[in-house]
Length: 213
Image 1 (cartoon, rainbow, N blue to C red):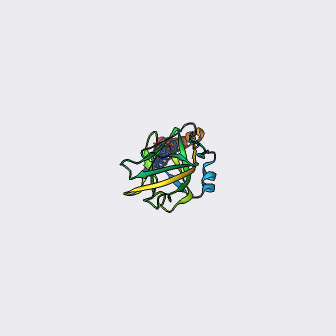
Image 2: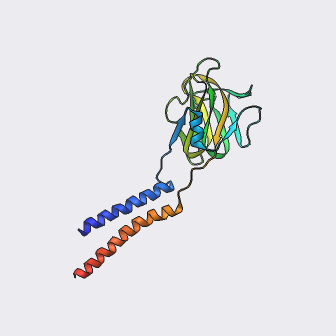
Image 3: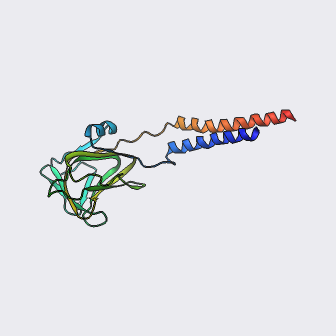
């Protein structure tokens, strides 16, 4: 009986530690949500910043490097990219890490190409958007955006296959909204649950053993 009880409460302690690690980010996996509806993206993100491309000056803290010479023309960002790993990638960078990115994409210029792929690079990790391609080549101005639970500060855009993809981008949106940190009191409680459950039971079992002698 004593062995069973000790095993039971040891399991409680392990589970409690796991939950605490999960909340502190030590046990985690990158989660990226993809949106094709701007209203839903805005609701999920909350506050965000928009670059309308009304002039050639980008928002402060927002920079772009296009290996093929893409730039702002006619109120749009016009560009062409090639397969990842070769020349022709476009890189958007942000002075502070963000969690969300999107815009209205038109892949119609110069006929349908090979579609678009995205790579996200953060202060501590590099990860891709689930699915392939990320934006299909039939887009003619529809919204496409993402929301991640892991900060990133660079967005790399490249062709989804051999060949090139011409596209234009309008109303680029991004958000620096931070996911709330777990309540410190909650973490303390989670830890104490395991400690008290294990320690308290061990003390009771020890007292019972003394009385039986």
